[in-house]
Image (cartoon, rainbow, N blue to C red):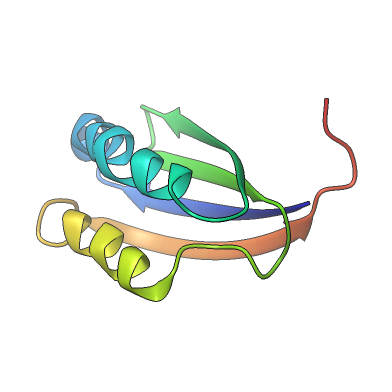
Length: 95
């Protein structure tokens, strides 16, 4: 298995809107993708920091490009992103 982790820093007062968009747009889009195994969103309300982990069957599984662009478009002009990083990891243990 393979996991992709996004770390996003937002303005703290935009966190609720970002979580709502994540639930309405990212989760259903991920669930429709081949190789999807699970999703997790973690937030820090004080700092506006969000971490998202999506687990896939393999490194090659992920959002198809048109779907990924649609997901990004849902956040454009709605959320102020101060910083964004994307990392990938092999899943070495899972319960």
